[in-house]
Image (cartoon, rainbow, N blue to C red; front, side, top):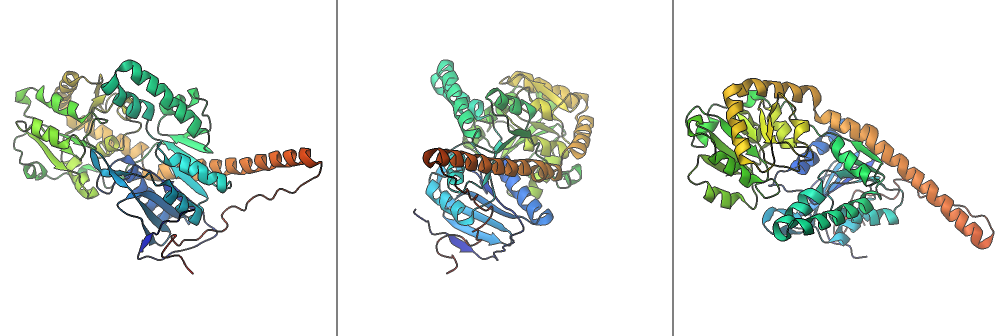
Length: 451
């Protein structure tokens, strides 16, 4: 098998056979693109290093093959080309490089965080190392969000419906292979149940309520954007692309009454950013780009007045929760996970793809008292959500269930082999189960492997 040559950045490899080696595997990572999975990877790394004895291997796309080891954290970038139209993201096609990393480190648990290509890379790895437990995060209802929406725009509703059916078939075949699957909402769990995927859990994500807080409000933020006046400052933070329906926000803004004095800031990058900035050149809308500094994002949210989102296929909505933790009410759409994030009293939701209804909700919310609604949203975020709860469920419930299922698989496979061989020759054989966690190293494959 081809083994790529990985370049290692300085760091100390740590091996502790009493701990688990856990691997995160995803296409949906960008150091400059934001996104829920990038946030999750960062928060999970901090949790593992601060609160567990485990080791964490995170495999993501990058500009070149490179492994960075920092104690118990191994960050492996697999060289991949940028996604056309979304240059902040890359897509791994070199599954041989991923397989080489997995075979070298032999993680006890592989957690797959996106639906395309890499889940089957993990499944094929498990066929070679059957003691590996596989966990999948069903984080996006991709047959709707990625397949149906895109195909409908290009080929019409009939073809889009057929392609969505095929995508759900792919999901069914893929996620049945995993020892455990978690969703971010009960609705998504019910969707998988209809596809007879039943080894599932619901794992809500979290928010850092210390970082995202009304205390981060900066009276000078509005001025720094070039805005004046006392009207509401609307804010959106996320990818500025078709999936997020970012163009609906500009359409909505045009329909706001002039006497409201509203301004808007759209924080993020994406394929629609340049076009929307040109289309909105006559409007008080700022496009500052992606905010790399999390404290800077917290400042922007806390210094705004209303969070707006037109995303119809949100499966959880970390950005919404971060806005709520910052003390903002939300105006969104009654679809996907948005009703779960924004129950009555915490904002206003309207129909999908209805900029007029969204503009009316912004106006109503501001005139009825957005600050009080934002205070209730903050209280909800503090009471119900926190990354500690997320990872306590992951490490305390989901991972143990996956490991138990992996053990059952090994026993079932051993019994099948025993029966098959006994039928073949009438004799009795011994089935030696592979030992979990043996043979691992913490050196990257290729140029820096120990002799």
